[in-house]
Length: 222
Image (cartoon, rainbow, N blue to C red; front, side, top):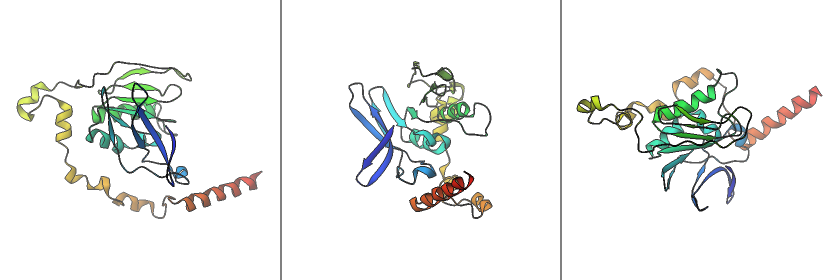
């Protein structure tokens, strides 16, 4: 991943390359941090790309903190997710919260997930949530594992007569009830009323003002 300029816009971009070095696709990070809004533009969707081994979806860093990007990629047809990142853990949360987060993204969507980061957060997680490979703590190393994109994590053949399929992934994706999920896409769901005036700074001007205030505070303590 890295920065890419497209005209007047600057994106945080992940590039998927084929075995011969050809570019198969690019993804622009959607969930950009407040500090990134100073200079970066967020992406506008979750495209998937065809590789010779299957259909690939990509996440970048902060995207993994939200369940929706991974689900959107899977609904678009992704069979495996790649996540280059600076980190998957959140400060002040339970031990191994990053590991739990990645395993749940895989498990929620029945899709393998590959995380690339320096150190122990580099890992390959199977579609059933099991960690297939993980780098050692405080080490940079290459990890590998065999993933079956045609496999199903759970055999529910005993339910086929009732549900019409033995594939639990196919069943769960078809049993979604999006007509009741309006809160997920509401710009201002009811819970935000609890936070009153605690609105995020979105514009570059607001972020720049915040940095100037931080510099004033720090300079006064020196």
